Length: 406
Image 1 (tube, one colour):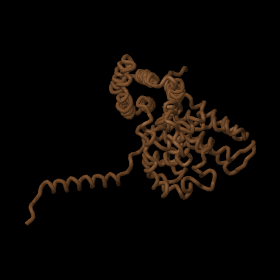
Image 2 (cartoon, helix red, strand yellow):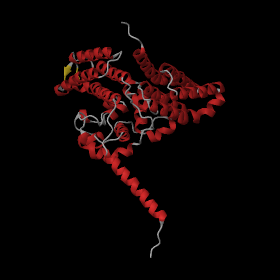
Image 3 (tube, helix red, strand yellow):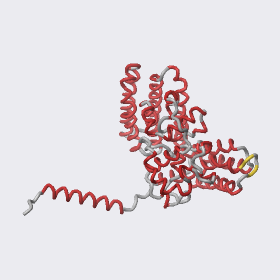
Image 4 (cartoon, one colour):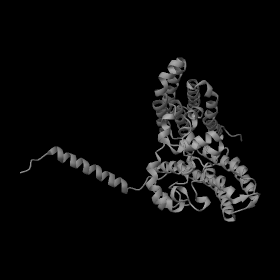
């Protein structure tokens, strides 16, 4: 007679219960979006429409004449739909100016003005919408490798976009460096938004997770990336572009050619690039995301990203910085603790934002001090990618809190 083994029975029951729980969770209805998430999804759709205006206008208009009438009409409609979506979003200081910007964009497209002007205006409007409505445009975690998305691309994307992006239709090609350089990595990610059915439909992206979307974005970015990796020295010159958020937000066509070509490769090869990102550059990027999350009202995400910035960014570089500037390390230790406690204590928002700003500035200062002298000036240029974005967001945030005169 077989022996009774209570431990095996316990393991079986535990496994059975765990599988049953997973099965029940898989059948459960997804949680409804919050009002803020709905607004961000609406804003993301407007950003997506404007991104394609910036990229596809040169295919529609050449020398002030239409080359592709169908595409031209589509781009006009994109701007009009984006303007209508903006009106659906909550009224905030800056929305009226944005609406005027979209009217001006519609007018210069109607006049068939030069593509460079249209590109700048469309991208500027998209970036202002993202800042005003706190749209998260970069992952807090490291970018996934492109290999994770190869099967998904073959199954869902290759029919329209071709093998490795070599589609016959220009607007569907994903291997044209000139065209793809006008997209940020977030623009690729945003085109796969599963809450919308106007881009691809539920059969293509309706069930994609955020990680799968980022993996597809990285894979697609690689179709037009240079074949040869950039020099490691460029990572020292442009550290803000090596990893998120810079690698996710910046469009290669909008920065100097040397930096743009390097970014094309870095964003397509996050695994091979990871070791090039200095820990303090990683800390600066995570602080950027944390501050954006906090201004958007997501204190939990802000706290999580703040602590990631400390553990994955500041802590690995602390000893090196201590040897260079002990006073700055002491100040950073104190600022990190004060900011962490302020978020936990739900301190006044203006105080928390000011602490974010001071900490961010000192992290950038620490990175500059650890940067080789010859590259310090160029690093300062790259750091402006962060500080400019932070400044825009801060001005918008203060505008929201400023009392209106009656």
